[in-house]
Image (cartoon, rainbow, N blue to C red):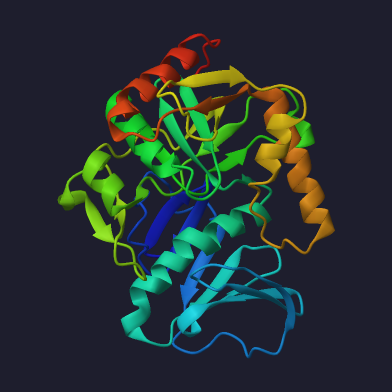
Length: 324
């Protein structure tokens, strides 16, 4: 019997026994098609915490990865847990306190599902991605560089669709697909914005809500929804330091620079795995060898964002056309 909720996430079909409120339901699917990942909910903890500690992440979710025989256990704040089958096809989830349900759903869609995509041979980057009429772009930059603000400005100024503002997911990066243009797949079609950015460039309050655990950070979904589930990647833009002379500066990157920048933003299911790191590096290499990368610096001035968006559009217009 099919699960009551279906979603596409990172190019993978998700069936879930409970609703994932931040994702767009996927209805154009026959019941005979097997999901890539099946999520279930349990009122009881899915496993005792007696597994071997593998890795701990810093950050507000305080995620910890443990090995439980052939399975994996991801657990975090508020006793939230997810028992994952070894191949990543089934996930048993638990939240002990109904008051933490928003945190639970946020952890599932923002941290657990992206890492599951990595387990399914997808490349996941700490970045942003948008799709226009002729393909997708990737925006790279460290935390605080302004990826989400720029992503919102691009969506607003150019009417591009947001594929992801934090962890875009890429397919077609295996050795069997050498030379094929990689595709960026939709995961979370919204942006997380601090209050100043939200007030300057974000959609109005009808499309925004406070992110659990924050006082002044919002999850915003611009009015444009739907669009392609995936698009060929046309260009990568790496945000540099703010320009000091109010100018917008850009250049195409060459040599090892784009590889180093992209590799530093890899998101792995198990960062302690040498095999997974090597596979991720091979995928990054394939992405960089196929897609041109640019460094772009600009003034951190909200008023300059429409001009920055147009500059990025002009660069994309010089690239060879791709079919969506």
